[in-house]
Amino acid sequence: MKALAATPRNGELGFWMAGLAAQRPTYPCFTGQDSLDLAIIGGGFTGLWAAYFAKKIEPSLSVAVFEAEQVGYGASGRNGGWLSAMPAGNRAKFARASGGGGIEASRALQQEFVRGVDAVLDILKAEGIDADQHKAGALVAAHTEAGLSRLVARREADLKYGLADDESQLIDRDEFQSQINISTVHGGLFYKHCARIHPAKLVYGLANTLTSMGVQIYEGSRIERVEGKSLTLANGRVTTAKTFICTEGYSGPLLGKRTVIPINSSMIVTKPLSDEAWQQIGWNGLQCLNDSAHTFIYAQRTADGRIAMGGRGVPYSYASGTGGDGSTPRSTIDLILHKLGTFFPGIRFEAEHAWSGVLGVTRDWNGGVHWDPASGIGASAGYAGHGVTAAYVGGRTLAELAFERHTERTRLPWVGYRARKWEPEPIRWLGVHAMYRLFGLADQWEEHRESTTTSLLARFGGRLAGLHE
Ligand SMILES: Cc1cc2nc3c(=O)[nH]c(=O)nc-3n(C[C@H](O)[C@H](O)[C@H](O)COP(=O)(O)OP(=O)(O)OC[C@H]3O[C@@H](n4cnc5c(N)ncnc54)[C@H](O)[C@@H]3O)c2cc1C
Image (cartoon, rainbow, N blue to C red; front, side, top):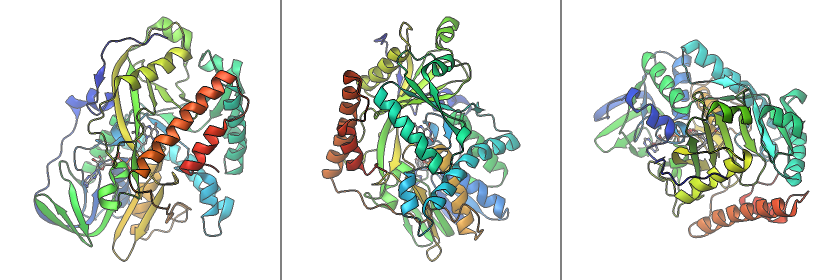
């Protein structure tokens, strides 16, 4: 392991946003009064995609996006850049909850997410948005036999829930290492439909596109209250026919503190690696990378020759804290650097920037899209870390529901899906921390015992969280 003590930049909304600070488009703060056809709360991917599709459906609509801080302030500007086909939730639960649709309904959701990856890439091309997008699939590494047996089971579930044979493929150790030379790998899974993106470039590209379509964007414009068709800001009031709440991990004040909670995820990006390091690592295909550990990592090789890697640090702040600009404890940075060091021994990794952000998580980790025609209010949230494609599907579905376009998306089982409420504090804090602790212990157990089966601790943690299928 080569964890260095050098202090990286920390927080500042993360590497992607900080790196584009000079080019960032800025938008006015809303004051006064206005009347709109559609008001969108939240300037992340969900809100931006919802605005995009609303204008595509009906170009004459007056649409405004209200962002409390700055566009891309939330998870959309800070994520790992995986545009993946993983649905935002547990496929078995969606099958059970789909009002008679069963597995077929869940398969339809999976297939919409598969289509979603290419649909987003097609739109970026059509709109001339350069977000360093590159579709090369995703590799999931198993570092233990237990992890590998989980991947075998996961692939069976993939096929059951709608992926084709070539869309989820088991690969052996040699094949894995010929693509990414991880020293500890036992084998893995390859997912065909996944693309790397630069999150902040995607946020700004979408925001610029919206402006050219006539959407008004406001920054520093927090919606304090939603009362029927009336939205209240610190210095203004908006009357609107329809409202979309697209606030994901920040949803507590508007959707209820026990509906969607903010769970933290932390990332680092290394300094650019040398050619010799890349020769050792390989990764020439630019696949996205994660692993089958219970406390998994996710990573990408960036367009400028770094590794951006994320994992779970401090999982949850008491009473749903959202972590401001994303300052990250040194212990979390060292944990992620340590992982990198064990994957690629002998290479000297230095973190250039570390940051954290929040995922929106429901009690059973299943996301949902909701539209109430009576009140004219809708929401799409709870993607639990699989939100880049989910935001596109969710935002588009919200627009279709609100403007009465009946499509394959408006029938999906996450439309109208409601998880039960989170426990009140302090049980919520204790439960989330206990779950992460169990997952951490389970990983240690499986590594040290060279276990071939998943630890009971992890199974218990999964049950506690409601993650089991
Ligand atoms: C570190 C990290 C890594 C991740 N990696 C991946 C990944 O690789 N792949 C993947 O699929 N997903 C990933 N995710 C999840 C994904 O980024 C999110 O699910 C997705 O970006 C959510 O988009 P959103 O627009 O719904 O929410 P956000 O991007 O969080 O946007 C919500 C916005 O609402 C604003 N807001 C909140 N309240 C108000 C209010 N009252 N008035 C006005 N505005 C308000 C906030 O300021 C914020 O900008 C990651 C998340 C994190 C934190």
